Length: 255
Image 1 (spheres, rainbow, N blue to C red):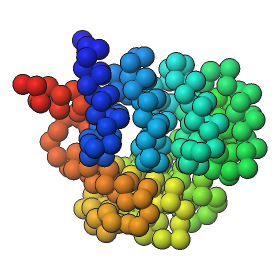
Image 2: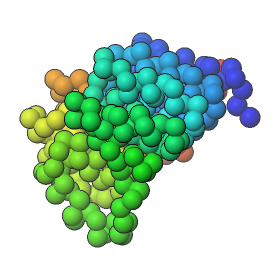
Image 3: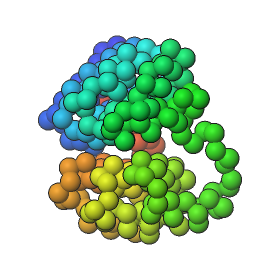
Image 4: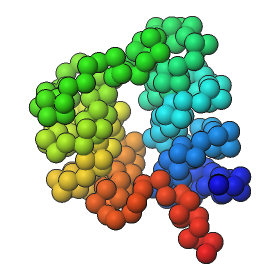
C-alpha cells in the first residue's frame, strides 16, 4: 500500500526543475501507475514548467490514466494559447482517451482551431477514440515494412503519430527511417521528438548512435527527447525491472 507521503515525495521530484529530466520522467510514470487524486494533483501542478517535452508527457500520462478527475486541468491546457502547440495537442488526445461525453462539444470546438497541431487530436477524438483504436491491427511483421514510409508523407501531426506507433511496435526494421527523420533538421520538432522516443523504446545498438548524435541538438524539445530516450535505452538494455522506478528510488534513498 502506497502512502500519501510516498506519493508526495515522488510528486516533489516531478515538479522540481533542479532534478535531472530523466528522474522527473521516471517520477511521472510512477505517478501514472499509482493513479488516484494525489497523483493527478502533482501531475497537474507540473504544467507550469518551461519544458514543452515534460508538459507533453504530463498530458499523455493523464490520458493514459483515464480518470475523469483529470478533465479540468486538461481542458485548461487545451484552451491555454500560451502553452506550446504540442502540449495542447496532447491535452486534446488525452481528453479523447478519457472518453467522457462531457468534453465532446469542446473537442468539436477545437477541431477548427487555427493551430494545426491542435486541430488534429479533437478530430480523431470526436468518436471518443484514440487516433489508432479505430484502425485494423495487422500483425507487426505486416505493418512495419509499410509504416516507416509514413514518416515521409502527410502532415507533421500524422508523421508524429507514425513515429509513436513505430515506437510502440518496437521493431528493429523501423530504426533506419526513424533515425533519418530525427536527423532531418528541417522536420517539425514534434516529429523529431517522437522519433527520438521511439528509438529509445526500440533500444537496438543503431538507436544508441542516432540518439547520441542529437544529444546536443539546438532544438530544445529534440535535445531533451534524446536525453530521455537514452535513459529509456539504458533501461531497456539493462536489468532493472521497470522504468517507472520512483518508489524504488524513494525507498533506496531512505533505507
